Length: 228
Image: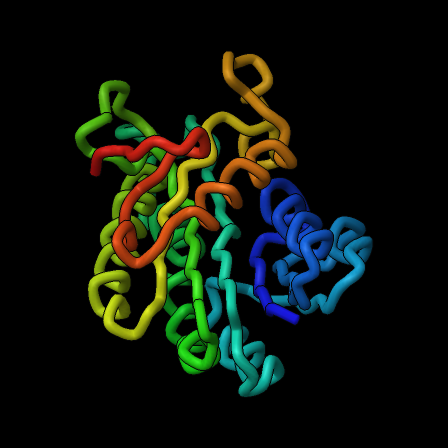
């Protein structure tokens, strides 16, 4: 049975990804900082994991053991309210909290579980980014911490893709589009908004379709490539 770890699985896209992988026959370990009803409802292994805490990551990797890991999906993310993430208001605290979860967490969890990924015959590594992290596509400004954290995670996972290509690890950087989740509750007012289940299904299709020749690239849920 193939194996998968999904972060941010208590709600939103992470929860939808975990459900999808369970249906597809994966042995899923679903994790989240919040062990709420969403996580508890999943018919799979679950654990509490604070991706912003190196100690929590170390404890989780030890509990996971030394078996192979076929899919690691770094989905957990945070976004400060726009009023707190603007040029006049953004603080070091907001920047630090956002980067700890959105950028440093995925890197350090990938580092911790890399021995497991390298035991897989066809490992895939996904990270949830956002189009707002694209510098070439930035025409609106704002969202300083969130935007910068996603630009940084793009850089980190492009770098990981370069280093792990010879080891057979396919890295997929994902943009979900507008999705109705707790992270962006106002998104229903926007066009092209989808529910988490549709976003996860389309992103899973993108991830499954990519091989080493396309590793380390930035993809929209609809399947087209995004600029950095």
